[in-house]
Image 1 (spheres, rainbow, N blue to C red):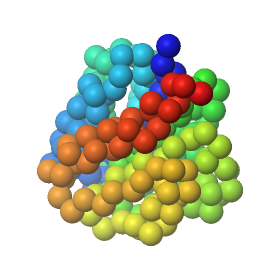
Image 2 (tube, rainbow, N blue to C red; image 1 turned 90 degrees about the vertical axis):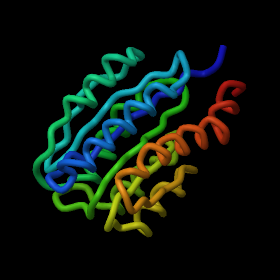
Image 3 (cartoon, rainbow, N blue to C red; image 1 turned 180 degrees about the vertical axis):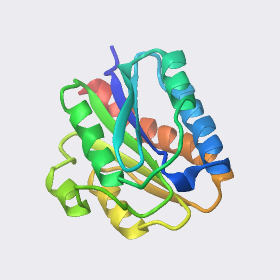
Length: 183
C-alpha cells in the first residue's frame, strides 16, 4: 500500500492578489488537487493579515476545490504565520507531509519571522514547495524550501501558475512520493 501524502495548500489572498492573479491561482490550485494521487489528502489554508483553514484535511476533491473557489481577497500578507499554521496541521499526520505555498509579496504582517520557521525544524518530515508571483523575497523563501528538500519557483506572470503547480506536484512525486511508499 503506498504511503499517503498529506498536502497543505497555502494560498495568498492578500489585496494585491485581487483579479487575474487570484483567478489564475484558483485554477492552478484546483488543477493541483486534480493531479493528487487517489489516497492523498490535502487541506487548504488561505492568508492575508490573518490565516484561515478553509478546508480541513481530507480526500474529497470537490470539497477541496470548492473551498479554493470560495477564497476572497483583501488584507496584508502574513505568509510566515500561514506556513507555521500549515506545519502544525501536518504534524499529527502519518506519511509524507508537504506544504505548497503561493505568495505574491513580501511578508507584511506575521508574528513569525523567517528565522522562526527555520528553527521550527520543518525539515523533520515536512517538505516545503513555494511559488512566488511578482516581487518577492526569492532568496529567503528559496532557502526555506531547499532546507526541507523542496523547491521555490518564481514566476513573473499569473498565467504561469498553472504550469508551475504542475511542475511542483510532479517534482514531489518523482523525487519523494515513490520512495515514501517503500519506507
